[in-house]
Length: 120
Image (tube, rainbow, N blue to C red):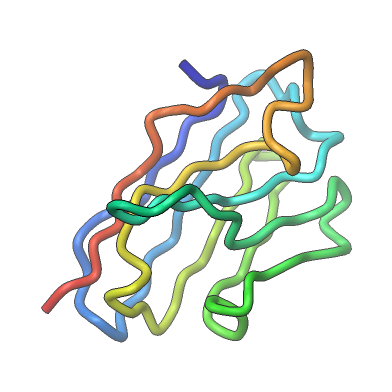
């Protein structure tokens, strides 16, 4: 069981938007680069976006560049992923973790993730 809590997923039509949240209640990972990962059915988990500890540097996979925005709110101890112009290929379970994953004494671990389904 992971130490982070993902939420915000759901069913959305193509072209729609969702905002995912990754809560770090004990603020253990505020000093680490964080990433959003996703796992589509039958495919390996992949990194889609990442953000530095300060929020000043971001990374996006080519397939989401220009559509997704990652940001973090230190006061709220939360990392967000704003997903716009969603496509059916964005369907999957979304997880947050450090980048690279599990670098803090083996943590945070993989949580339950949040399901995103893009379908008409």
